[in-house]
Image 1: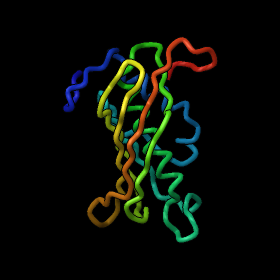
Image 2: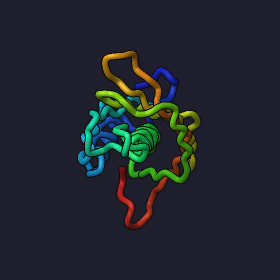
Image 3: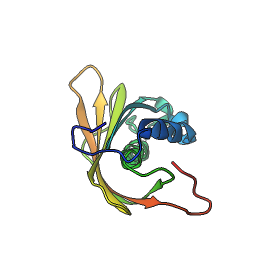
Length: 155
């Protein structure tokens, strides 16, 4: 399967690998996030607004926004990795563009430049609700591929 960005996964079961790894992330379950799109080099995660994840002004906390877009970028990277590989974030920059106010939040992670060891991704988070989707955050992330590391499992 080739994605619209032209990336070809290294394993035919890339979607199952991403979904299986995502299911192991207890933080995603804790915040109510779900995987809604798995394409080679592009992932989307959807999360509902929850009062218990807000900051003092009632907006979704920046840490939660960062959590979902970091995972989207990480899984976009994993979707292109060989069997047995895992991915860790080694750097990111987040720009918070607007208060995170909405009924749901969609995080999209996209591989910009894949590499054997280092991959660069971009991410976006949109607030969804009664109005048009509103871009509330962007991310630039650097991901590192790990293979054969004791204590770090695939995914």
